[in-house]
Length: 448
Figure 1 (cartoon, rainbow, N blue to C red):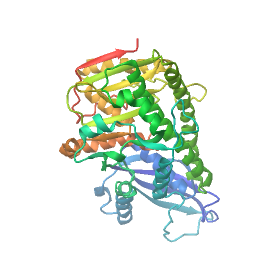
Figure 2: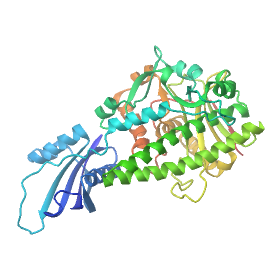
Figure 3: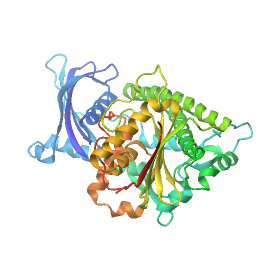
């Protein structure tokens, strides 16, 4: 990660212990991040957590290195602190009477939010569950650890000694990587599971894709999409419950504000996911799959990555706006994407309900344009998956064969998705992401 230096003009809030002595200050921040906007947002959040109100950006973010501080002892200490802890702050304050001076003080960090507790709460919610089958009843009382990525035909194909690399939810991994995504080895029995179905319904409904390669049939395509929708719904339900608790119990105003914002966004997403699930439920109830639309990319080469995800697409592969996710007065379009084993090779399968075609069809067309311009779809699709999906697993043999710059670029791309301080840039899909060497033999579009 880069290190950015940014300065804010601030005043103490009523909760600040120096509110009666200090009129204002400059908050000088050193932030390790990949993006200057994200660094600015994170620095501002950390300052506000310490009970300061940010009035303006006094100095915009600039890249800095250790060589910039060779003759500046305090600044060099702050720079090194940021290298170890991601953020360091120094305040230059002036008193209200214009005369009083304060000796250097060490500010206590906010204890309102502890990342270890947060990750533990996520894990606890994941262990709870309910059956999301469209015909679930009171007898569905025993949700199982159902794989959202197939264990056989997907995870087992890329595993080495029964293990794959996945984004780690372990506190020690997160702390060691300064809060950034890190990939760690895990056994395939526990990878990509969610407690969203009872054993009976999971076996019954997904048998056509768990026991058979993708043909593809309309029913199979719908099942891959349905599994992605249900997992996303399950995860979003847990997020809403967690953000409700944290927003309610956060005494720190800055922490309360960010969790309240996350709660509002997650609640709207959950509302839309529930509406999408009802549409898929209706297709299974009627056993009619005419409303499913799709685009399949086939590859004969061994897969280095397997995945299953769903998102509300906001920008296409050329940076054009597809839909406004900030508008809460209309239903959002949803796209699912899955790894699917076929009789020969595998496929990257995009699927969506026809009601979501207004956004999904232009997205596919923009991909076709980029593929034509660059002569290949592979690197564009690899970026799409890594940038939009935390539910993925990586071949250890492939991952360990990559050079360090390629691994770093992949992790940087993955972090853009999970960083709440990083805005989604319109051009986030325009650049290729290399390393996977995905080669696709043919495409089967079914959306016109």
